[in-house]
Image (tube, rainbow over all chains, first blue to last red; front, side, top):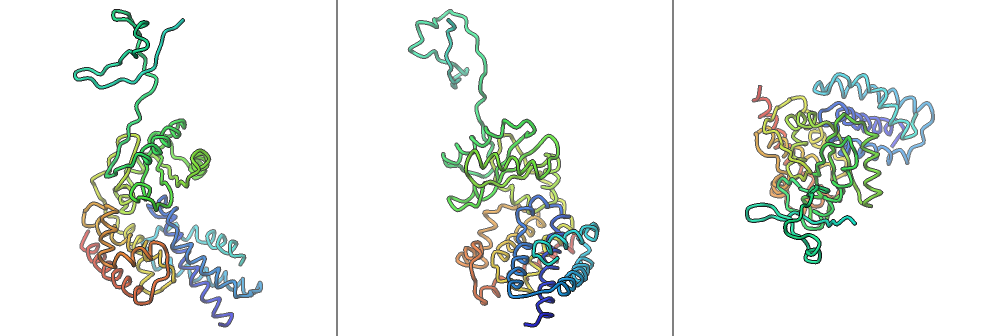
Length: 104
Length: 262
């Protein structure tokens, strides 16, 4: 697969992962979901696996940040049942996951 | 020299009683005056739909006793697979009801202390009782978690269920995702099926008994496949489709019921 396709796949997976994480953080069951964060971790691990085969430079990483933000914003906008604070914590959560995956 | 002995109060036909040990009968004679002082309260377990083995009962009593040292813990509740599985349980889930709202650091500190003391795997969640009771009214997943429990004090699950549409839609988000995208991570199907079956019971105002729910899921997908997804094992495309069919049917049903509610 080409670089652009990898970037597209990784950002799609991560935006879904973060949508789940943000939903859990802001949900009523946040204490319960602290344990059952599987929706986030399964997707993050899948992104990690794909990343092993990639070699991104700083330009690519910047592109991933922009694209991930755009996709996550869209994901969250479409789900009005997630608390509106979602847009306030979005950037922080993006930063955390990108740092974890050494994509920042 | 002070004459004393420690003995347990026993149940009598009319009154509870304390027997003088045979070896001390010469020292404590009929007509003597003694003072009775309570030095240890009997450990009582409050169970809800749980039958404990001697080993588990002893371990739970030891855990309650150990946690009793922490002043801010008002009540302890044990839930989860440790109570319902014979041998294959992930960890011991402990809910601590505290005087004040505590943060994650508190949970981690207790977790550390418990692990040090018992060398077992624990999961600790703390919260104020009032918050938990509120959660149990709104949250199907919390209700299923509390469908079987053991506590050191009396604890009642509120009968009232409040359907919060946004909360239900949030729960349905995971199963919905699995309809269109296969992550090849079968445990996600297990979790989603559990969420759907529990939510359906909640909406229908039925008991969210997790053991019965597991049985219902097994009836739908078969015991073998149920065990496979529980262990996050590889499942075939045919089996994935089978689960997806169950998920989409349930989703449709739940959303239909949800739209019928105000």
